[in-house]
Amino acid sequence: MKKHYNNVVIGFGKAGKTLATWLAARGEEVAVIEKSKQMYGGSCINIACIPTKSLIVNAEKGTSYTDAHDIKDQLTGALREKNYKKVADAEKATVVDGSASFISPNTLRVVGHDGEQTIVADRIFINTGTKPMVPEIEGADGSKIYTSTTLMELEEKPQRLVIVGGGFIGLEFADMYLKFGTDVYLLDSHERLLPNEDADIREAIESVLEEKGLHFLPGAKVERFREGQEGVAVDYKMGKQRDTIKADAVLLATGRTTETEPLDLKAAGIETDKKGYIVVDDQLRTSAEHVWAIGDINGGPQFTYISLDDFRIIKNQIIKGKYNSVKKRQPFATTVFITPPYARIGMNETEAKEQGLDFSVYMLSADHIPKAAILREERGILKAIVDNESGKILGCMLYCAEAHEMINTIQLAMNANLRYEILRDQIYTHPSMTESFNELFSSEALNR
Ligand SMILES: Cc1cc2nc3c(=O)[nH]c(=O)nc-3n(C[C@H](O)[C@H](O)[C@H](O)COP(=O)(O)OP(=O)(O)OC[C@H]3O[C@@H](n4cnc5c(N)ncnc54)[C@H](O)[C@@H]3O)c2cc1C
Ligand SMILES: NC(=O)c1ccc[n+]([C@@H]2O[C@H](COP(=O)([O-])OP(=O)(O)OC[C@H]3O[C@@H](n4cnc5c(N)ncnc54)[C@H](O)[C@@H]3O)[C@@H](O)[C@H]2O)c1
Image (tube, rainbow, N blue to C red; front, side, top):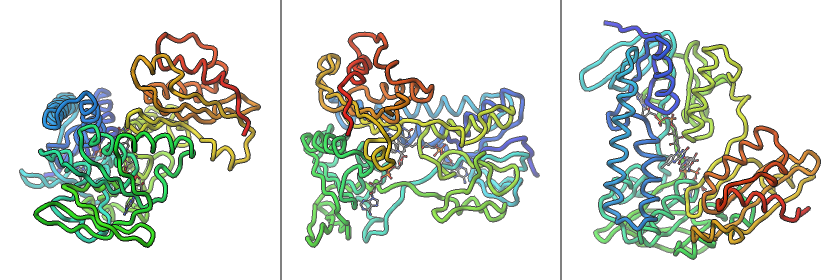
């Protein structure tokens, strides 16, 4: 028997679950198909943002490795239930357990523990996320080689951890495990940590991490993993030198990739790009009519708040609102949750120079900020790039305590097209990290 819904969301991601509850509240029938009961609510709450930040915070508080993992499991368990109920309890919404694949552009096969069913929908939203990319390195399938998902399930703290990849995940896990007291080695094929950052920012972050005990091996090419009873040996090459690190565990943090084969997209005529991401237009429409791809799977920036913003774009198409295209998306910030956190929005000094812009650089050392002294976190620097003619902020890099909160104020000013003097002259609460904008934007303009 075929079941019909007005809307089907494949995958319980941020965009999809928000869309489903919104559609249901409007009185439209909607089904959310999720292949794993452990993933109700999607990656963010189960295996990504929330559990990692919980572990980071608890590691910082000095909570033991085991207790921190218990706290993380309780938190994700509660959120999973809450997320499930939010959809399942909505009158017009249904959660369908099973893995979905296309039979035609508007027909899906769903295979679950209870058997197979066919679902027909007027609109389909694919929100299936990504999975860890496992590089083709000999021994990468070994039992001591982990991804961000599986490492968070490891019950015993590794004494020595090798991390391959120094991007968002590599850096956050490196900092987290250093806090737990693990000896951490970070290997990246790039010659530099954070290659897209200005040298002063990069060096500041690198030196704090090295002070904490991180062994950073830039330009290291991992050649093989060899597992034995004692642990795992990581053979790598740096320049012409070959060497080996022995560790208890290895984390692969070399990026994310797609898993679209099970969806059988060809059956619906849905195109993918060379990397497997679903090709969408600026309205997130796929090559099949009435099928959209939202969240990480459409090849856009991989952040929960971007997945949420994909929901806004779909919602506006449905209500015929203005914010209906990714072309209308304004600049947004990112944060690497290390300690202190590193938050950034817009262009940095290197990029402004490359573009030949007439700009000034404003800089402040975090140890000038009274709140930083109170927090006993005086490491870091703040840096803003301002257009000399318009006074608009072109970009901002905050490497200091509370940077992940402060950057949202900068983002608001940038997106509201405010001149930098507005931030310079605001009355801020005291003592706060944000009040440092009085000083940052008054710092002598450096025309470089
Ligand atoms: C370790 C880690 C930390 C991160 N930290 C942050 C952070 O701090 N801040 C931030 O903004 N972003 C962070 N991210 C990125 C963020 O998690 C993702 O961008 C976000 O979760 C994207 O979600 P989504 O909407 O694309 O779908 P997801 O939340 O990934 O959901 C996809 C769902 O689809 C299901 N599914 C897949 N295929 C099928 C199928 N065929 N049938 C049925 N169901 C299917 C999956 O089981 C899954 O539940 C982090 C990522 C990782 C890996
Ligand atoms: N705080 C956050 O917002 C947050 C946190 C975690 C993840 N994320 C999202 O998840 C995405 C994935 O994170 P990620 O850290 O896996 O990817 P990434 O793209 O940020 O970093 C991957 C790193 O691995 C390195 N690398 C790739 N192949 C390698 C190899 N064979 N040997 C050595 N190094 C190698 C790359 O040079 C790069 O530095 C991020 O891009 C981000 O969008 C966000």
